[in-house]
Image (tube, rainbow, N blue to C red):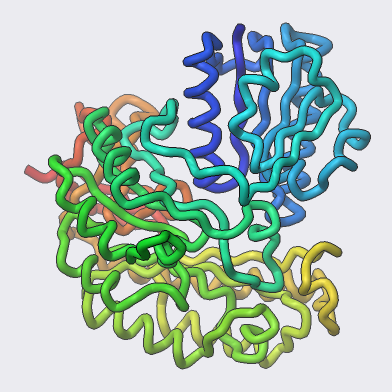
Length: 439
């Protein structure tokens, strides 16, 4: 039985997709790259914001055509979309045979093999499902790099965020289990391990015997080999001095801090349910740069949040210019009636929010270009990930995270995918670097 799986959304979703694919291969299914050749098509969806939900629906409808024009006899939709919209989605998307919520990934084999399951939505409580362990089958899809999910769910209650409802409370894996999987991945040739969860810097606090992310990073840094380690999705309230110092102490841990702040205006942060203020953020980033002078900072922010005034936005813009993040993601607030923020007064017109988005991105484009120009003629280790054409390779430095940041373009005669090579930067763009190997 041929299967074709499309994974949408974040890196955490991708790990779920890789686990489902691994389980299906163990059950005798054969993953195929072309949906036209698939007997079963699976779409692992995202619905974090309206744009993501719309992308999920468009993808489902496009792939549903293969039930008429291809070999597909069964279309399965998994993940956040059915979890968010529940049983109503069955009638809204009659093209789909089975929906699996975020707590039902372990039923993917049943969904594929049991033809009696039809027009159903399986929605077990995500809190009742244990997180995957190191011995679960998994089919890697990201070349010489891999995401390592260290926890599932989130205990926070940010007013704009649907994730706790979709993924349940935080459920951390044990430190020992994560280390076992990390060893398996590096033994398979993985050269970069990227730790992910909903609140990565809060890792371990929910375990019977609590541990800290710094302890996990210390253990991972002792794994044999030369693989890099980084973490994404930190939180200003849960990152500790111990984590910052651990990054400073271990050269294998990328000096890369992904800490979404969402805003810098105190009144906006309060309405968002974020329990810190602008000055707290300034002190945090100053402490990181003091302990790790070569640190690369990444954050994400939301513009157009209900009640955000012109003055609030100017505070945010000024903050971005003051801190000078290496990487910045900007989202326009996405409203929905199942969010607590939906009840807040003074919604921001879409056109105003879009202008604020564009102003922030223009400012960041200039900052990123200036930071990149300072890297001209310097030499950096680069993980080679692909070769789009002869003599051209694509890779990433330690200050470029997968998918969300720029890349390093390498002009070379012959490099091996998965190698870490020293590259001299010969040219820079706003977000990308260009270079040649340096002996």
